[in-house]
Amino acid sequence: MSYSVSGGTSYAHSRHADYEAIEQVLQQQEPYLGRARTMDMSMRVRKSLDESFDEAPPLTRTAARDLTDRIKRAATQICLLLLEAHDGRAWSSLGYRSWEAYARQEFRMSRSRSYELLDQARVLQAVRSAAEISAIPDISAYAAVR
Image (cartoon, rainbow, N blue to C red):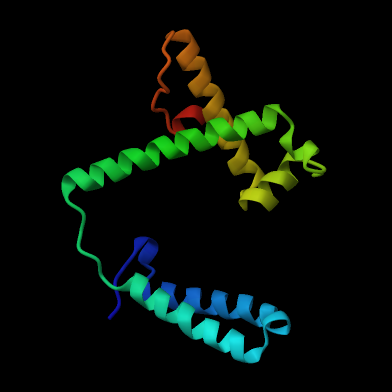
């Protein structure tokens, strides 16, 4: 069975891509783990992936809203933490030559995406300061760039 996800990609296609990625990782680890252990791990990972693709019952509206709100709060925290890392030159302390190298290596994030999130954090801080509030305002990275 194949279910559609955003962009027209199907779960079956996504599962196949996940299998391929796992196989590549395990092939690279084979010299360290041995062929038998790698094969065993591959089978267990595939089974786990198959189970994760099984259709789960939909969340209730209340549970979905709670989850969505938690995701939004976590995203806001990420941008504020990135700003703290940037302003504190965390990349330099960890031996990276640049912010870009740090963001790419540590978070698999492009330079442009990292700066979008830094902009979002700066806007959040400015709004919070100007409004003299302690809460973090809900401002998306897209709105912050505008």
